[in-house]
Length: 302
Image (cartoon, rainbow, N blue to C red; front, side):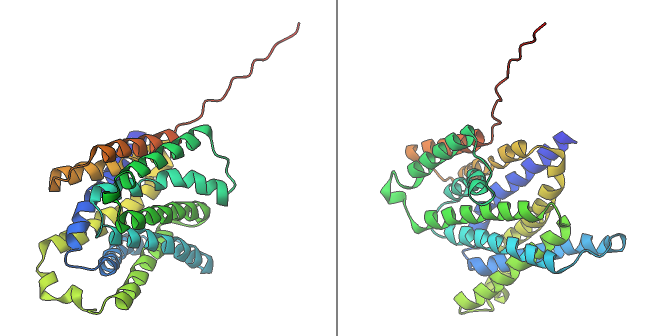
């Protein structure tokens, strides 16, 4: 079962990496908030179907605490996806993937600040390496620095906070209802944001959008696979593998994003960007490596 869990999570990460290009193409026709509103509403429907089918087997699980927890996690998820989708309008899918991947390194830092968990030596080195990589990717060449990079960086912070808040509530609350509330929260907040920041509220129903194959392909793939399936698979399969192994698997997301950008749209990275990507990748991996415990020598007296 461990191998099944690892390969399933790797497939989830592959989906996340590949969909950066698909989302960027869809944003040529839809504004970011409208895209996320429809995506997460469709994901809610996909998750609701299996939940209803098993409802007769479950007891009473819905309560005020569940709604508050799901909304809390959903707000961070909304900020993460909102900032990431807007950032894709100004930066490249490959850079988006790598910068978003920094959330893997940010989690232990926020754990120290918010949950009072101590940082290991490997974590400190990993954070330092990832920071150097981020500098090389976005600041070493001033011409490559743009608002999209900054937005995606704050997106990474939001995703890290989503992981922290999920860890806080997931131990005591049922996974599927909690996921349903998260997803519906993202959809609702995205719809509200679309109405506030977009003048044409009926853009999703326009003939120009309705006839675009790329838009609906991106919505279906991201809703069914990158959202509904991905969050359910992550919750289910993490019970069969270790947190360190999960983190290592998740660190492959920016690699898949860069590879898919190169293969699908021919995106090329500068030397500084390649070195920066390498530092971030190594930093994410090194931060999650277990620290070897020193063996204590005991002496027996006879």
